[in-house]
Amino acid sequence: LGACRVSLSMTEIRAGFTAIKANIQSRDPIRTLSILSHPQSLHKVKSPDRCCITHHLFTFYVDKVFKHCRTEDSFVNRKISSIANSFLSARRKLGQCHEQNNCACGEKSTEKIKQILENYEGLNVTSAAMKSLGELDILLDWMEKSR
Amino acid sequence: SGELYCSLPNPRNVHFESINMKNVLHWSAPEGTGDGVLYKVKYAVYGVGKWIRKPECRNINRTWCDLSSETSDYEEQYYASVKAFLNGTCSDWVETTRFNPLTDTKIDPPMVSVSSTDKSISIVLTAPEKWKRSPEEESIPLLQVYPGLEYNVSVLNKKTKKRWFFSIKNNTLVVPWLEPGTAYCVSAQIHITTPVLDSSFSKEHCIATLKDK
Image (tube, rainbow over all chains, first blue to last red; front, top):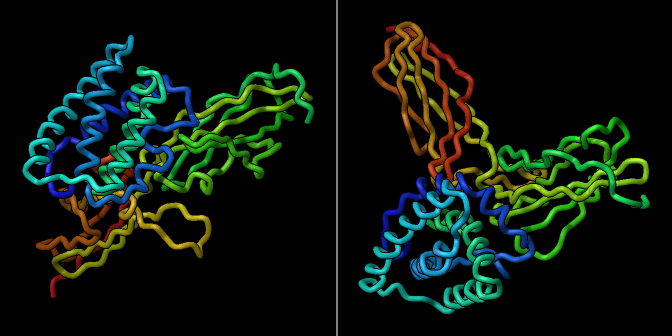
């Protein structure tokens, strides 16, 4: 991820998300708004400081998304906490690297992160968190494409 | 057609079927309706405000609609929806789940070509291309779409029934130290590590090594 190399089991996270994708996305009735890809698709962000965006997005998911995504389905909850744990450990490593390698945030990345938080704040917490979780594949697709 | 009161049963099982990102919407006719049902289709880019009608799939009596062109940007995600009409009445719009062309497509097996010497066979694999609007359009290799694309190759000695498996990243493989004058059969599969997407294995391509000089 740019200057930082963080090991992250994408296959495991992918498998976990795929198992609950239909369930989570069906809880998000708002088709016309995206948290990660509004107004511009996350993929369109061709940013050199990828490590900065990734670090902020991991922080966003750990601090603002996973904790607000409890459901009545224990299978779904288990998958969510497994994904959350993977993000937590990756964020910790990315944070350490952040300090050592000055994972700088350029203007474009800062603007994109600000937009994501605004999109999130624009909905009530549960809707915003569920929508963000339902968009996890957008983040994973972007991370893999820009490996 | 004048849409009176929508009392028609809904189309069922509305879903995308996608192969190499040729994305076709499919559905089943509403329960209990015979011939004569017509349909119209719309689609939306996830996160963008509006539904867009598909003119080529307006008042159609078939139960599929090719939306490959409309969903060709695989960095976006999509919804599609179908409505049925019969004798002046209609059904509700019925939507798909969210469709991600990158993860929700199936991949065809690679094309396999083989050649041989007396003690080795050479294998060249060609992955399918991403669907494109017309033959003239520039091809997008799947390797560009999926950087993690690999090949699993199976080689079978027809005489001894011994089989080898290889996992390779590039698309060529030379299998050395084989027996002269022996038939070998090769089959290959595309394996994408993440998102996990595996093609089926190709049909077998058999070739004999040359006899000893």
